Image 1 (tube, helix red, strand yellow):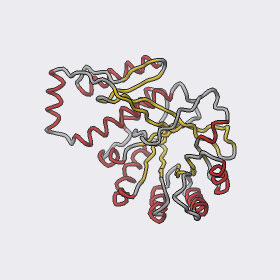
Image 2: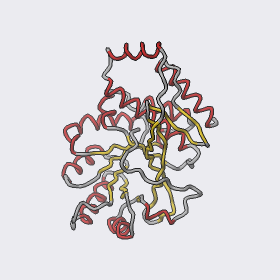
Image 3: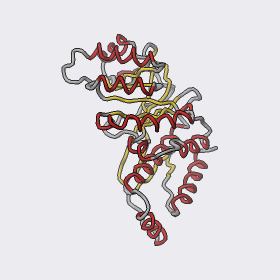
Length: 290
Protein backbone atom coordinates (compact mmCIF):
# COMPACT_ATOMS: atom_id res chain seq x y z
CA UNK A 1 0.00 0.00 0.00
CA UNK A 2 1.39 3.47 -0.86
CA UNK A 3 2.64 5.53 2.09
CA UNK A 4 -0.03 8.19 1.60
CA UNK A 5 -2.77 5.55 1.80
CA UNK A 6 -1.26 4.14 5.01
CA UNK A 7 -1.19 7.60 6.57
CA UNK A 8 -4.85 8.10 5.70
CA UNK A 9 -5.70 4.65 7.09
CA UNK A 10 -4.03 5.31 10.45
CA UNK A 11 -5.54 8.79 10.70
CA UNK A 12 -9.01 7.32 10.17
CA UNK A 13 -8.30 4.62 12.73
CA UNK A 14 -7.19 7.24 15.25
CA UNK A 15 -10.40 9.22 14.69
CA UNK A 16 -12.52 6.15 15.38
CA UNK A 17 -10.58 5.02 18.46
CA UNK A 18 -10.49 8.44 20.13
CA UNK A 19 -13.86 9.77 18.96
CA UNK A 20 -12.05 12.76 17.52
CA UNK A 21 -11.74 14.62 14.24
CA UNK A 22 -8.05 15.13 14.92
CA UNK A 23 -5.73 13.39 12.42
CA UNK A 24 -2.26 13.10 14.02
CA UNK A 25 -0.21 11.71 11.13
CA UNK A 26 1.33 14.06 8.54
CA UNK A 27 3.16 13.11 5.34
CA UNK A 28 5.58 15.76 4.07
CA UNK A 29 8.42 15.29 1.58
CA UNK A 30 8.14 11.52 1.84
CA UNK A 31 8.46 11.43 5.64
CA UNK A 32 5.78 10.83 8.25
CA UNK A 33 5.41 12.87 11.44
CA UNK A 34 3.03 12.41 14.37
CA UNK A 35 1.37 15.05 16.52
CA UNK A 36 0.95 14.58 20.27
CA UNK A 37 -0.41 17.72 21.87
CA UNK A 38 2.19 20.46 21.32
CA UNK A 39 4.84 17.92 20.27
CA UNK A 40 5.72 16.90 16.72
CA UNK A 41 7.32 13.44 16.51
CA UNK A 42 9.79 12.54 13.74
CA UNK A 43 12.09 9.58 13.16
CA UNK A 44 15.83 9.11 12.93
CA UNK A 45 17.44 5.76 12.13
CA UNK A 46 20.88 4.50 13.15
CA UNK A 47 22.26 1.51 11.21
CA UNK A 48 23.25 -1.61 13.14
CA UNK A 49 26.25 -3.44 11.66
CA UNK A 50 28.13 -6.69 11.87
CA UNK A 51 31.28 -6.22 13.94
CA UNK A 52 33.61 -8.09 11.60
CA UNK A 53 31.95 -6.77 8.44
CA UNK A 54 30.85 -3.19 9.22
CA UNK A 55 29.56 -2.51 5.70
CA UNK A 56 26.88 -5.19 6.30
CA UNK A 57 23.80 -3.60 7.88
CA UNK A 58 21.40 -5.96 9.66
CA UNK A 59 18.85 -3.45 10.90
CA UNK A 60 18.14 0.01 12.27
CA UNK A 61 17.50 1.52 15.68
CA UNK A 62 14.73 4.11 15.69
CA UNK A 63 15.44 7.34 17.56
CA UNK A 64 12.75 9.86 18.28
CA UNK A 65 13.14 13.50 17.22
CA UNK A 66 10.77 16.04 18.72
CA UNK A 67 9.90 19.65 18.04
CA UNK A 68 7.10 21.99 19.07
CA UNK A 69 3.85 22.24 17.14
CA UNK A 70 0.91 24.60 17.44
CA UNK A 71 -1.87 22.84 19.34
CA UNK A 72 -5.17 22.49 17.52
CA UNK A 73 -8.38 23.35 19.37
CA UNK A 74 -10.75 20.58 20.45
CA UNK A 75 -14.39 20.48 19.46
CA UNK A 76 -17.06 20.38 22.19
CA UNK A 77 -17.78 16.68 21.60
CA UNK A 78 -14.09 15.86 22.00
CA UNK A 79 -13.85 17.80 25.27
CA UNK A 80 -16.89 15.94 26.64
CA UNK A 81 -15.36 12.60 25.67
CA UNK A 82 -12.09 13.57 27.36
CA UNK A 83 -13.89 14.55 30.58
CA UNK A 84 -15.81 11.28 30.57
CA UNK A 85 -12.54 9.36 30.26
CA UNK A 86 -11.05 11.26 33.22
CA UNK A 87 -13.35 9.51 35.66
CA UNK A 88 -12.58 6.00 34.46
CA UNK A 89 -8.91 5.72 33.50
CA UNK A 90 -5.45 6.22 34.92
CA UNK A 91 -4.43 9.04 32.61
CA UNK A 92 -0.73 8.97 33.36
CA UNK A 93 -0.45 5.41 32.05
CA UNK A 94 -2.95 6.15 29.27
CA UNK A 95 -0.81 9.06 28.07
CA UNK A 96 2.36 6.97 28.09
CA UNK A 97 0.67 4.18 26.16
CA UNK A 98 -0.80 6.56 23.58
CA UNK A 99 2.55 8.31 23.09
CA UNK A 100 4.27 4.94 22.74
CA UNK A 101 1.79 3.74 20.13
CA UNK A 102 1.86 6.99 18.17
CA UNK A 103 5.66 7.18 18.04
CA UNK A 104 6.03 3.52 17.10
CA UNK A 105 3.56 3.95 14.24
CA UNK A 106 5.53 6.97 12.99
CA UNK A 107 8.76 4.94 13.09
CA UNK A 108 7.11 2.00 11.38
CA UNK A 109 5.84 4.13 8.50
CA UNK A 110 9.21 5.86 8.04
CA UNK A 111 10.98 2.51 8.15
CA UNK A 112 9.09 1.16 5.12
CA UNK A 113 10.95 3.12 2.39
CA UNK A 114 14.24 2.25 4.07
CA UNK A 115 13.89 -1.45 4.78
CA UNK A 116 15.02 -4.49 2.90
CA UNK A 117 13.17 -7.69 3.75
CA UNK A 118 16.04 -8.96 5.90
CA UNK A 119 16.38 -5.76 7.97
CA UNK A 120 15.08 -5.52 11.52
CA UNK A 121 13.71 -2.43 13.26
CA UNK A 122 14.69 -1.89 16.90
CA UNK A 123 12.05 0.06 18.85
CA UNK A 124 12.30 1.07 22.49
CA UNK A 125 9.19 0.57 24.61
CA UNK A 126 8.70 2.54 27.81
CA UNK A 127 8.95 0.33 30.91
CA UNK A 128 5.78 1.96 32.22
CA UNK A 129 3.95 0.87 29.08
CA UNK A 130 4.89 -2.75 29.75
CA UNK A 131 3.90 -2.47 33.41
CA UNK A 132 0.71 -0.53 32.65
CA UNK A 133 -0.72 -3.10 30.21
CA UNK A 134 -1.72 -6.29 32.02
CA UNK A 135 -2.12 -8.58 29.01
CA UNK A 136 -2.04 -8.75 25.20
CA UNK A 137 1.22 -6.81 24.93
CA UNK A 138 1.98 -6.11 21.27
CA UNK A 139 -1.53 -6.85 19.99
CA UNK A 140 -2.27 -3.26 18.97
CA UNK A 141 1.08 -2.78 17.22
CA UNK A 142 0.80 -6.18 15.53
CA UNK A 143 -2.12 -4.78 13.55
CA UNK A 144 0.00 -1.77 12.54
CA UNK A 145 2.82 -4.05 11.37
CA UNK A 146 0.46 -6.26 9.37
CA UNK A 147 -1.12 -3.23 7.69
CA UNK A 148 2.38 -2.15 6.64
CA UNK A 149 3.00 -5.55 5.04
CA UNK A 150 5.65 -6.75 7.50
CA UNK A 151 5.85 -9.43 10.20
CA UNK A 152 6.42 -9.11 13.93
CA UNK A 153 9.61 -11.18 13.58
CA UNK A 154 11.20 -8.13 11.91
CA UNK A 155 10.48 -5.93 14.94
CA UNK A 156 12.73 -5.94 18.00
CA UNK A 157 11.14 -4.64 21.20
CA UNK A 158 13.88 -2.90 23.21
CA UNK A 159 13.63 -2.40 26.97
CA UNK A 160 16.07 0.11 28.47
CA UNK A 161 16.90 -1.36 31.89
CA UNK A 162 17.92 0.64 34.95
CA UNK A 163 18.17 -0.08 38.67
CA UNK A 164 14.82 1.60 39.41
CA UNK A 165 12.98 -1.35 37.89
CA UNK A 166 14.96 -4.13 39.58
CA UNK A 167 12.05 -5.04 41.87
CA UNK A 168 9.73 -5.34 38.85
CA UNK A 169 11.79 -7.78 36.80
CA UNK A 170 9.14 -10.50 37.12
CA UNK A 171 6.40 -8.21 35.77
CA UNK A 172 8.65 -6.91 32.98
CA UNK A 173 9.57 -10.44 31.93
CA UNK A 174 5.88 -11.40 31.87
CA UNK A 175 5.12 -8.48 29.56
CA UNK A 176 8.11 -9.14 27.29
CA UNK A 177 7.13 -12.81 27.03
CA UNK A 178 3.71 -11.66 25.77
CA UNK A 179 5.49 -9.78 22.98
CA UNK A 180 7.62 -12.82 22.26
CA UNK A 181 4.58 -15.09 21.91
CA UNK A 182 3.36 -12.81 19.11
CA UNK A 183 6.61 -13.28 17.22
CA UNK A 184 8.48 -10.12 18.25
CA UNK A 185 12.19 -10.29 19.01
CA UNK A 186 13.31 -9.00 22.42
CA UNK A 187 16.31 -6.83 23.37
CA UNK A 188 17.62 -5.52 26.68
CA UNK A 189 19.57 -2.27 26.70
CA UNK A 190 21.96 -1.33 29.50
CA UNK A 191 23.80 1.95 30.07
CA UNK A 192 26.28 0.43 32.48
CA UNK A 193 27.37 -2.74 34.23
CA UNK A 194 27.60 -1.13 37.67
CA UNK A 195 25.24 -3.73 39.16
CA UNK A 196 26.69 -6.60 37.18
CA UNK A 197 25.05 -9.39 39.21
CA UNK A 198 21.52 -8.02 38.68
CA UNK A 199 22.19 -7.43 34.98
CA UNK A 200 23.39 -10.99 34.46
CA UNK A 201 20.48 -12.48 36.43
CA UNK A 202 17.94 -10.56 34.32
CA UNK A 203 19.57 -11.78 31.11
CA UNK A 204 19.56 -15.39 32.32
CA UNK A 205 15.89 -15.19 33.31
CA UNK A 206 14.71 -13.68 30.02
CA UNK A 207 17.17 -15.06 27.42
CA UNK A 208 16.64 -12.05 25.09
CA UNK A 209 17.48 -12.17 21.40
CA UNK A 210 19.77 -9.15 21.81
CA UNK A 211 21.59 -7.37 24.61
CA UNK A 212 23.16 -3.95 24.08
CA UNK A 213 25.56 -1.90 26.18
CA UNK A 214 27.15 1.48 25.60
CA UNK A 215 30.83 1.83 24.72
CA UNK A 216 31.00 5.12 26.57
CA UNK A 217 33.35 4.74 29.55
CA UNK A 218 32.15 4.44 33.14
CA UNK A 219 34.76 6.84 34.54
CA UNK A 220 38.16 5.16 34.71
CA UNK A 221 36.91 1.59 34.68
CA UNK A 222 39.97 -0.46 33.84
CA UNK A 223 37.92 -3.66 34.28
CA UNK A 224 35.53 -2.68 31.44
CA UNK A 225 37.08 -4.96 28.75
CA UNK A 226 36.80 -7.96 31.08
CA UNK A 227 33.20 -7.06 32.01
CA UNK A 228 32.21 -6.68 28.37
CA UNK A 229 33.76 -10.03 27.52
CA UNK A 230 31.83 -11.70 30.38
CA UNK A 231 28.62 -10.07 29.17
CA UNK A 232 29.18 -11.26 25.61
CA UNK A 233 29.86 -14.82 26.78
CA UNK A 234 26.67 -14.87 28.87
CA UNK A 235 24.51 -13.48 26.05
CA UNK A 236 25.94 -16.04 23.64
CA UNK A 237 25.26 -18.87 26.13
CA UNK A 238 21.56 -17.90 26.25
CA UNK A 239 21.29 -17.91 22.45
CA UNK A 240 21.36 -14.12 21.98
CA UNK A 241 23.53 -11.61 20.15
CA UNK A 242 25.53 -8.84 21.80
CA UNK A 243 25.57 -5.22 20.63
CA UNK A 244 28.07 -2.49 21.52
CA UNK A 245 26.62 0.99 20.91
CA UNK A 246 27.97 4.56 20.79
CA UNK A 247 31.21 3.56 19.08
CA UNK A 248 32.67 6.93 18.13
CA UNK A 249 36.39 6.18 17.93
CA UNK A 250 38.89 3.50 16.98
CA UNK A 251 39.51 2.53 20.61
CA UNK A 252 35.86 1.56 21.06
CA UNK A 253 35.85 -0.32 17.76
CA UNK A 254 38.82 -2.38 18.97
CA UNK A 255 37.01 -2.98 22.26
CA UNK A 256 34.05 -4.48 20.39
CA UNK A 257 36.28 -6.76 18.34
CA UNK A 258 38.40 -7.90 21.28
CA UNK A 259 35.35 -8.66 23.43
CA UNK A 260 33.76 -10.60 20.56
CA UNK A 261 30.57 -8.54 20.21
CA UNK A 262 28.31 -9.62 17.35
CA UNK A 263 26.96 -6.22 16.32
CA UNK A 264 28.05 -2.59 16.57
CA UNK A 265 26.64 0.90 16.16
CA UNK A 266 28.08 4.41 16.23
CA UNK A 267 29.50 7.39 14.37
CA UNK A 268 32.84 5.65 13.81
CA UNK A 269 31.23 3.52 11.08
CA UNK A 270 29.78 6.36 9.02
CA UNK A 271 32.75 5.95 6.65
CA UNK A 272 31.19 2.73 5.38
CA UNK A 273 28.58 2.71 2.57
CA UNK A 274 24.94 2.32 3.61
CA UNK A 275 23.23 1.60 0.27
CA UNK A 276 22.38 5.24 -0.22
CA UNK A 277 21.08 5.76 3.32
CA UNK A 278 22.41 8.82 5.13
CA UNK A 279 22.44 8.31 8.92
CA UNK A 280 20.49 10.75 11.03
CA UNK A 281 22.32 12.73 13.69
CA UNK A 282 21.88 10.69 16.89
CA UNK A 283 19.51 12.10 19.54
CA UNK A 284 20.70 10.14 22.54
CA UNK A 285 18.89 12.34 25.05
CA UNK A 286 15.45 11.06 24.06
CA UNK A 287 14.78 7.41 23.43
CA UNK A 288 12.18 6.02 21.11
CA UNK A 289 9.39 5.01 23.41
CA UNK A 290 7.58 2.62 21.15
